[in-house]
Image (cartoon, rainbow, N blue to C red):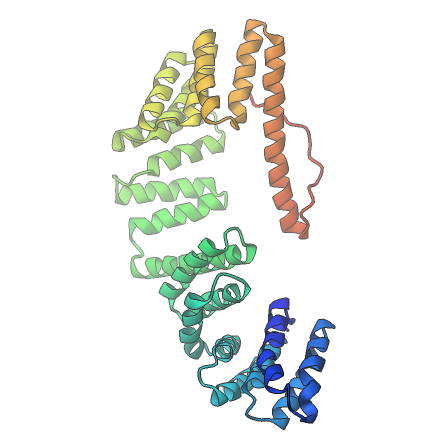
Length: 399
């Protein structure tokens, strides 16, 4: 059952304003109802407030504001059908009552009557100012439009909600749910409509890759290439998967794939970067320097390529050149922990131990910050707490 939120309680109180003005000179026994309702709401006595509203509409069935207040509280209490009845009565009294119309739409959505609710929710999502009520309307519109198979409205709503409420966990969750369901339905349509398409192999490869089934993913990527030899990124992804297998011949086989990707797509900076990493780890420093330089040419400012080139220059004992490369990178990306670590190695090579200690301290701080940020998010996901769990000391990457 939905608990009455501060927003809904506020709306219940707000609905009384007109009543209080109307009853300021009345001798009706129900005159004290607005005060009693407000008192009940402040005491979080929603059932008591509902009883007072019912007494008001019994005494005056044409009291549209009271019908609206009753409907809002019933909706907030999870009693959508009763809320819809009360709000319909409010609209009979005053067909232009905006709050009654909006909460009737919200109630209809709760009752899965999305065909009736969608026009109302769409109207008020567009007209309400950003805030709690518009957020509630948007969340309901997002859920209802998908249930009603209106994917266009669902997507538009998700995009607008992410813009209006950036970082909101509920908005992000509902958006993720929407995109996941759309992915599943579209994938099923692809498999059903085009079972022999190379795209089916590509899709299967991506699923297997996400699940850690490396061998099966490689087979599916190769099958996709068999159907479409010019399919971009396939050789690169195969190469990365081969490296992840850790087999003795992984470097050589992966290098073949990266070269094939570059032949297919001469702009593939990531393939050149991957080749540089393999060549450097194999001690082929001249080749590695060429690879990293190419990667930086294809994608200006690629941090991984800049670090790799600096590591290669250091291995060639070109300390000044390595430091110049790193200073440029650190100026652009001061948060790059790997750059500070390699800079530490250059200072250590020069015997500048004090400078090396400074860079090592910066590296550890950046590593720790990243680890703490991840742990904090993980802890929040698992426990609902924002507290940061104790983290272990930073470790240095391989030189």
